Structure formats: structure tokens, C-alpha cells
Image 1 (cartoon, rainbow, N blue to C red):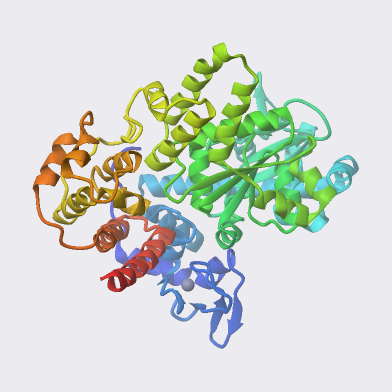
Image 2 (cartoon, rainbow, N blue to C red; image 1 turned 45 degrees about the vertical axis):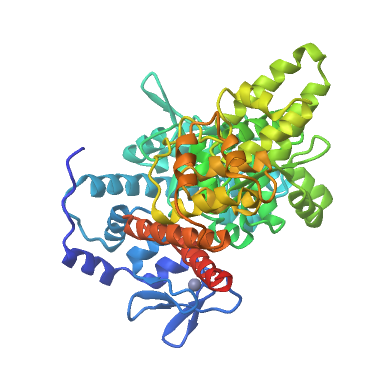
Length: 569
Ligand SMILES: [Zn+2]
């Protein structure tokens, strides 16, 4: 399975593209309206009120006149769905019935397509079974109050408890159901492992069914049973409804994460289209990657009981290494021991929207949790709590946020920032050990920026966070200058004094000895940012699977920065 896949001939790709229908492929994710020879919609790549996104069946192309995004059916799968290029080609080839040269990708996609086709069939079959089973109907449509068309749209199902009922599946299909955990295998005999459960199909980025979550009716243990990890299903990565919420999450700029699948269902019915549910495990780094791929802000909305609180804290700890740099995490706490489902049904949509808007930012949740623990314990234990709090900061990659939390902790415990710093065991303003050590390299622009900053250290507070992060060694120098709070007109010796015990002293000495003040710091900062954006853009465009959101964001940001350079200069 490890040999290198041969290239796919351009003629094969051309014939795949000519046989699939781009209108149908796009329509699966974006509602298109016929307009003359073409189809129109509001662009899924940028936000707009009037449609400028067109799909042309004759040219087999999509094009947005607003943001310039364009491409063929392969580009669509890569840029919109985030499917790797080779897999996109293999999926479309499968759709078009065109055999690809034997290679690992095509074999894997073929296998995945077989599995997914069977699981889709099982999902539809179990949906009909739900509709025909009074006990299951009473639970889903009665107790849980789900609307019938929602159940149909999500393909909610019910798994029969009698093995004989599964005779509609061939042996090969049953084997796939065993791999997906719908059926179990004991002493060589198959049995309905998820029998008697409400079934939620779990889909991958492109909407293929890859597994199931089964929930017991009423009470029982375990409450949720998931497909086991397999070739195509990874519990740590999947989220219920992830592919369906892409557009809504993009429009709202946030995604809400609940514990229970029924929470996601009833919030959808209440008009919150950007809610996904975890797979019953604690939040994992892989989950977080999937969540932040949907939107820059993740709101964790867990049950208002002790277990929910504990899950929220675990989500916070898992988020520490990945938040910052434009990624936000916050926590909406459902009151009175309710779950989000009960809350929105009891208090209505507006109240739930308020709950989301008042969600607690991660930084506040972090500090308030340690404050509460400190206040509930005798003085003798405070140093242990502070040590634990400080040790949590070590996993963070956003230097500014880490620094801010350290200062807030020092205030809670009534100690100096230096005490927190020594509890962390390394200089807070340095990158954590995990990150690549900053090289001494600094190009002319960056050198000039830092040299100018060291001559006007009182301006450190005005440096934009995203500029300092882009300059080698910048974060450290800016943070130390900010803490020192030097007065306007201070001497070079006073400035140097700030760095006496720091590893960056040699760099500071070189900078202090070099160059003259030539341009205002603000202009230099903008130039650095524009330069950095240019490089990011080049590397984003060079990547084999282009991230459309990333590229669009960089281009927009660069335009803003270039404009402000002109204004400032
Ligand atoms: Zn557009």
C-alpha cells in the first residue's frame, strides 16, 4: 500500500470532468437558481446579499464575479469541501464510472465508496424502520419533540433489535455493518450491536456516511454508542453535522459545539444552523482542528450539570495550545442543570441567542476557575494551585495571551508577575519549548523595525500584536519593553537595562549599535505585515490543496494593509 501513485493522465481528468455534472455537484451544498443558461446563488466563498456566484453547465465551471473565485468540479471539491486533490479526482471518477489506473488512492476511494454506499443504504433503511416503529416514534417525535421533516433531512433512524430483520443486507454489506459497529460479532455469529438505539448517521467532509452514533431510548448505558475507529471513521476527529453546517458557520463566523446529538437537532430546529455535536469523548485536538476549520470562533455549549462543567474544563485545556492568532474559544453555560435542548425548548430562540452572545471567553473562564479554587481553599494550598495554573500556561502558543493570563493570575494570587513566571519555569514571553526556536535571522526590514523600536521604546504599547509576531524575536522584545514601561526620551542604557538577564541581549546590542531612525514605526510595521502576507500568500498558493478561506483572507488583509501604508506614509 505504500508505493507511489502514478500520475493521472490529463486525458483521463478531462474525460472525468466532461462526464460529471458540476451543477448537481454544487447544488448538493448550495441552493442554485436557474438564470438563463446558467445557475446563480449567493457566493459560498464570500459573504454577500445579492447573488454573484454562477455555475455554467455548458462550460462546466463556477465563477464568482464578487470575489473572483472560479474553477471546475475538481476545484470545487478541493476548495469548498476540503477534499485532497487526488481523492477528489478519484471520487469524481467513481461518480463518472471511469476507472483510474490502479493506485493506492483509487483503491482506497473505491473501498470508501463501497462502505459509504452501504452505510447510506443502512441509514435510509433504519430511517424507514424508525417511521414504522411506534416505540421509537414516541421517543423521537414525542419525548424529544423532533419534527418529522427534520428526522427525514438528518436521516435519523432506529436500529432493529432482531437479527432476522437485517436479512435485507447481503453478507458483504453485513460485514461492512460489523466494521461500522451497527452489528457485532460474538462466537462467529452476528448480532444487532446497536439494536434498540436511535441512529444518527455521521458524514465526512463531502457528505459520505462513514459511521453512526446510536443513542438509547430514555435511559440506558452507554447513552451513546459510536462506530469504532476504522479505515474511514475516526472518533477523535468526527463531529455530528460537520459537513452540513459549513455555510451557516461561515455566515455566522462561529460554530457551536454541544455534547448531545439531540441538542444539535433541536438547536437546528430553533434556527441555529451552525451547531455540531461531539462524539461523546472529551474534546480532542483533532476535534478542535475540525471545529476551527468551520469558523474562527468556537462556542462550547455543554449541559448545565457537573459533568457538563467538567467537559467544558477539559475542552478549555485542549484549546489552550490552539487558541489565539484569530482563533477564539468561549463557553456558554446552560443554567439550572438543563441541557441546551431543554433550554431552547423552554426559553425559546431569543433567550438561547442571548446565552450564546454572553458566552464566557476562555481567558475569563480560566482565571475565574482558579480564583474560585483559591477562594475555597486555605492559604497553605494557594501555592500548589498557582503552580498548577501556571503550568497550564506552558501549553499555549499565543505569547500575548499567555502573558495576559500570567498577569491576571498574579493579580488573583496577589503576587508579582515574576512569581508566576518562575512557577511556569521559563520566560513567559519566549515561545514555548515545543515551538521552533526563533532563529537569529532577521531581514533588513525587520532589523530596521526593531532598531527603531529600541530607540523609541515608549512606543512599544502601540505595536500591533500581529506585527510583533511576524518579526523574529519581536514578541520577546516588545513584551519586555511593555513590561518595563520606559518613559519618553529615556537613554539607550536604560533601554539596554531591560534586557540584561535575557537571552536576546546580544541581538539587542547589535540593534542598538546599528542604523539610524529612518521611518515611523507605524509605517515599518505595515511594510512588515504586507511583506509577511505576500510570503504567506505564496506558500498558500503553492500548497497542493489550496485553502480558499485562507487565501481569500490573506488577499483581503493585504489590500487593507497596503492601503494603510499609503495613508501612514
Ligand atoms: Zn464570491
